[in-house]
Amino acid sequence: MGVDVPRTVRAALADRPVEGRVCLEAGAGVGNATAGLLEAGASRVYAVTNDAEHAAAVRERVGRAHPDRLVVVEADLRATPLATDSVELVTAHGLCNVLDPPALDRVAAELSRVAAPDAHLVVDDYAPPPAEAAVSRLFALENATAQLVDGRPLLTFYPADLLAGVFAGHGWQFERCETLLDPVPWTAAHLTAHANEVRERAAALPSALGDSLEAMADDLVDDIGSERAGTMYSLAFRRADGDG
Image (tube, helix red, strand yellow):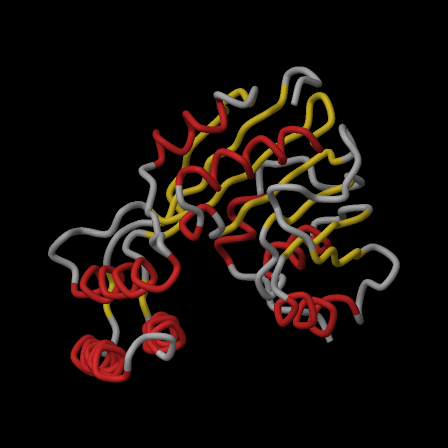
């Protein structure tokens, strides 16, 4: 049975030459973009993630149907084991918003290193949500909790032009920007996942503080329920030379 490919993935890949290409899904998650690349005829897809649970999910969801064309790689995206100039198309679907600026720059440099001359790059991400959106309060709580525990925010929402500038600085030629979602449907499942990030980190804090943060996250999820706010965009680039 095939994997359902989100329409945002199909839309982002629609104008890219996927068929017959060696591809990389940077930040594989549960393999949505990997499935989209394979569906579009990629000759091979490297699904790279540093999360063992995500790697297992991609193998289970996608690998069974495409054992000869999928390679799941557990690695840090800032330093992958892939060879220089070895990938013809790179996707980063919903990746950049979980990278702070220093990490984003290092990941952009690594994606540039592995990209072959004339390779294509597709970066899909979320614009900063409106300040008045209720989900912004949950994201702010998530970032504050991560800052307390990890010393850095968990989420950074980049405007499209800023993200385009980062990759242009690493040798990518901008080709287009299009809107994938407007507004973004933040479902109860999405909100619960973000609250779980608060809960996971709050467990490392003194109980009085951690319990308070968990309660705040749960209250926000209950209050919001679901919301449609903000946009998701897709950027496409082409690499004009082999410089990484």
